[in-house]
Image (cartoon, rainbow, N blue to C red):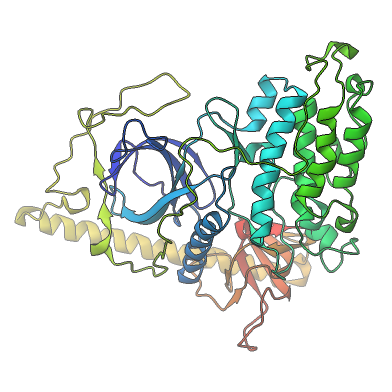
Length: 506
């Protein structure tokens, strides 16, 4: 695993990168300041989502191409569903970090108010506040569904707040899918909020669901589980993959409790055909709660009393400062491993004098260390070629080469012994585990042994279903039981080893 070296640097001659906010399987998230934006701009502070294909092992050309294509599709999906209550993409680019590693990145707007999960843990929302947030999410999802995009991972953690906590925006379209897609079901999202049709165990060929097609009703299910959190302040953990049929005891006497249970129960039905078929229909029923008298007398819950708040039956968007319906230039990332390096802007390190716009931080501000780096002498090129040191370097390289050969021979003998025992009937149970199955989350190389030292013998395509025969050091020996897409070459083997991180077990 190799992190990008970007902190305290100017990216692409424009973005002054600050703290790393997080890291996923193939991307790193940074907070940054746009040095070209006005100090009054709503987008002076931005978020950089950098694709880092080197965060995992077993990287090859096919996998890298798939990752870049998925990254570009995420940007296209964000532009396609552009809406006041959906996080906006502001730009994109390709650059080199201080080590010379080439990467692609997206620039998205920064919302300093945090996410709804954290907000609900520290604040009891009033009925009016909860309905206002849900209405905005419904407006954003309705727009996405209108353009044929299903989010598939709606949850409080993916709904972000503006600084004044009045406006929310849907984030993370990384696993979004077109509603016309007929690809096999893959596990996505958090189990607590994910509908049954997202589970390969329930929706696959051997699943229990009569109807498992992906429709907007999948987002309705996740939104209803999210609404439960907003109204109760509690996680619906007890109802994972099950309908919501009750509220906490303290809330049941409230005048609107029965109506809320009625709406949430229908929205989370196991069969998606029994749910509300679009978020507008869900909102129309839920908004009736806003017209009911609310009492805070029961159980002393700090919820507003006497509310007569009328909401529109059609979800209305709320627009924050800085929103524009115009999307930036569409990205066209190079999917080749040999990127055009001369056309990629290098990243430069900043010193404290260059940082004029401190980044907002959840922690106490700290001065960033100044590390001098002569611009005319990059780290990768600091090589001493003096004649006196060449013979010593040759001897060191020769010794290193001999040691490497010995290690390879030793490892090979261990591996051969291991495979002998596995193939011997006397040791038929050695190293084996119970048969399991799973789904490939991306294209994976199929190898003859559990190591990248072996050349690929085939390919497990994305969404292929496999049976796991055994596991060794996070590698799985698998048999493909259903290909994710049609195979042009029927002679490719269906059995081999794959890296376990790319298999979602059922």
